[in-house]
Image (cartoon, rainbow, N blue to C red; front, side, top):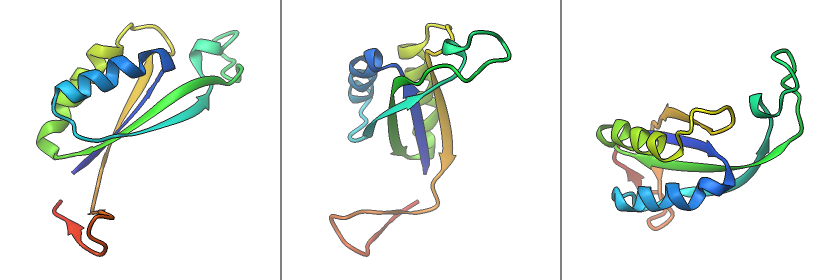
Length: 107
């Protein structure tokens, strides 16, 4: 299993979640966040700009779906400009659901 973490501008949330639903993603966690980086920097050496609002989307899915979903999100957010977003992919060793306490999902 993989965990895809997507950091985007709030204005892109509806576009990304709609694209994910159309691709068959049945669930995701969306969190409001704040961050700073290149888009706020005064110079190449200054990455301490003001905090700006961001959205963090987390999706757990099967390994075989990962590349397809990453490409879909890239296409949906991809302006190529600093601050458009980031996508991180991590391994998930195990998943436990609350519908069936103590029942481990298959990796």
